[in-house]
Length: 477
Image (cartoon, rainbow, N blue to C red; front, side, top):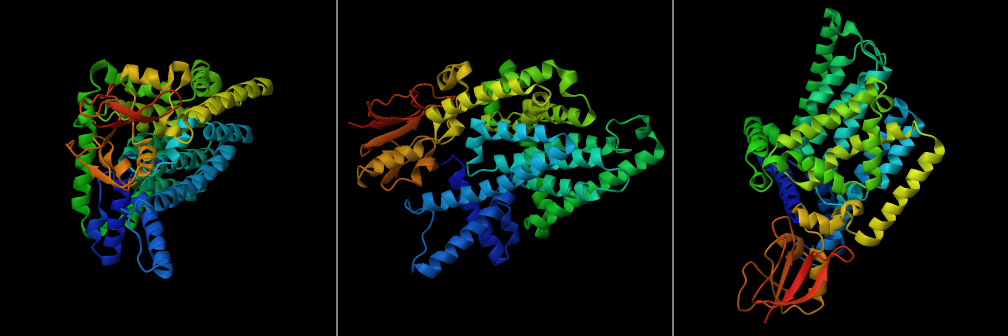
């Protein structure tokens, strides 16, 4: 399975590696997001693969080789999963220390049973790296806030700043969480569970200012060290990143499609469809029983972070379903905090229901969990009816594998998700429909609810979740 951006990030990683090796450090800037952590990680994979091929073969293969791409793509995704696994383990340790072993266990179980999150975690993309780095940074600060007083525990402040920088270097969306992180630093005064009026005393303000300065300094130093383009052209990089942030807020093409009232509720509607229905029910109950769930300041920080992210995403013109992933850890932690206050029988019953939903997701969507839509709201079909279904390259590799079995002499026209198909297909690919076209591979999407081609009227094969095809192969006359 390949997401629509995967091939582009593979190429950017190769150019990043070339820039580092040649000393052309300004060329390590490849994209506004900016994806530096992904490119560093994949550069190591690419260099290792190249070295191994030189040792055992005379001609190292490239991304354009349809036999090689699935292999290097799989290894690259595995490297991301390893990093995410390490961050997840750190999160469990921190949640255990901040709240309880029970809360940590519940959080871990909820996360590994969340179908859409599992699917995105297996993408070759920035979204999960950003999310896990950011939430681990957040937990470091909450732990530092709750467990330490005075100048003790500064290593967690340092670690939080480093992780936040890595989140931002993964994807700029992470910057939106800065108000919450600064709030935690400013509120920390005596190390007690609940701040008091002493926070406004002069000496406490001075301490808070020092801590903010330390956090900011470590954050900036990390940005500088990890992103080589900063070494040679910091002003140019900052200008490009600033323009990207402004563009995301007010100048994205999706703002022309998802507009008006619907735009304001987009990031409320999409989580309802993408979360497990059991998670959604528990989360709703968590908010209803607010006092039970958020009985202390460290608990409140989780909902503050969620609200912070939700507000920023809502006012932005960018309306993309996978962007909700950055909110998932906060949602799951809130659910865990509420869950941990319930009796064992109720917890067991809810988890059994959760397992049934996961079994449904496995039978319906495996191995493409990123295509998950909640069955409680009508699943994929209802998402199509509402115009919120998005195909991010899912199932195009299946179409390529099918057509590979028909021989290399076929001409295939790909009107959308071109790169999700082209790196897997061994035949001839066309950008435009022509007289020589043998097949068309096309998908449904939020702006393509129906697909018809007069020249290619016969639907030969379809792919997608069980009983809901979303990618089609049309045979031409």
